[in-house]
Image (cartoon, rainbow, N blue to C red; front, side):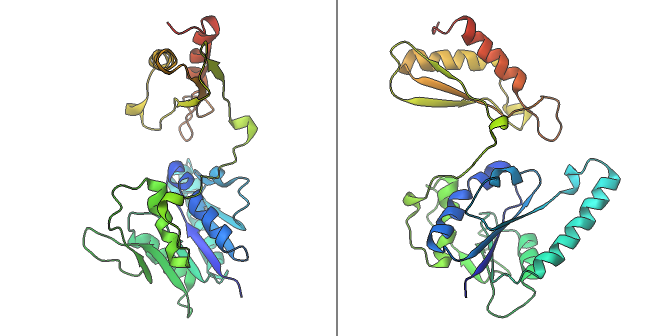
Length: 263
């Protein structure tokens, strides 16, 4: 009988993107397993088109609901969803977040409903040296040199996959065409390399003005002669839930449209 595994990833978009190599490795090693993910409405689009998963369960966080009534409805819907997940009879719940969370452990315990031969797999909590509630504890020893995706990838060892972190599969993200926009701005005699320049950031303190990105792009081209690809989060800047950088991207592209030569 094939395993039924639920992967819980309730954090931000980047965290889920960096979890996709782990999901890919599980699918490749366990083609007959039922793999599902529990995510939130904010990061769920990352998994659109991901054929490594058999099911994706999405809930809305109260802070993303928008009003007190919508928040109440979201809470009720989440409670109902948890009861439905409990009835799915998962064999294992995987918590790939490197930061130990007792809240997630309790969530996993509720979903598994105390049935025999089930497991909760997660990373140890190093601050106090405990990992209450986990059935399989993944060590964080000697992981300081690893990329976050490689760090999370260590969890596959709990499923009998003995692949070194260095062999972590690439991320698998399949964005919708209408949500992606890129452009090439080759310099004269451009080398056969491409550099992606991503201009978006969620935190206000981490955002640069368009002029700074234009200067950086021209500096990269002048130094490396590379082909640049511009990436950004689509949408309007004043969108409170998913702020986008369509305006900033247009300003950068306009600067190169009038003068593609590095200055």
